View 1 (cartoon, one colour):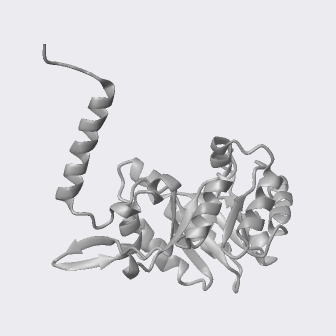
View 2: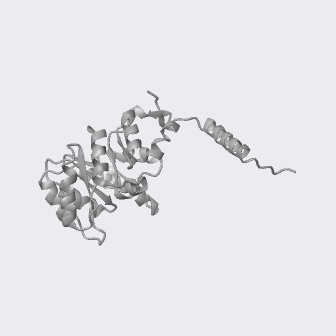
View 3: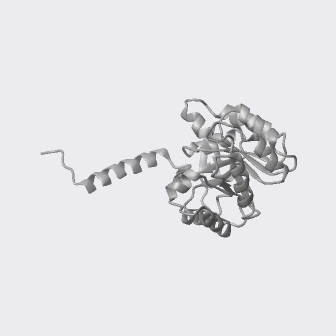
Length: 252
């Protein structure tokens, strides 16, 4: 197994084997999901309606059943599509019934901004495994964790990447989220909307339990620990090769 050096600080090198954070793959390309599953590095999978749209999924139930068939023994988060709470509840029960490894993703509000907390409380009380998504505030974190029934397994998905898109450091919030979630055994925190490989390091340092990573970012993991001088050379070589392929000439 290839060992990737993640970071060097004060002469101490961290390696992939030192990671305590769990990595989930985020996507809806079933073939790519199967490939990551075979590699064995990813420990869970998540998807959402937007990713399904990008992947060209035509039938939700068919897609979901195939996911469960191909990934039967790792956590698999599948999201409801309905925008009304009655519809969310009905879809949640259908999704839950697809497999024992399935977590039902419930958005923290509907598109009107109405809180999903009452539905989360109801479903959690019945023992459904929930992944509450689209969380971006401390209030949402607190209310979500409080809504989970004791003894249930749940995930609090904080969209750290989107928080940082606004120019705000998400690390302090993720640290606080971990502190709050730790008071409810069985509740895990998740760093969502990962933007770059370094977010994995940030997520681990914040104490976050899980980070979702797209296939494009997973493909960059071999760069961990690469000598920067070598990476510089490879970058120049790429520019030269691409320039040659264009056939451009600047000199007369």
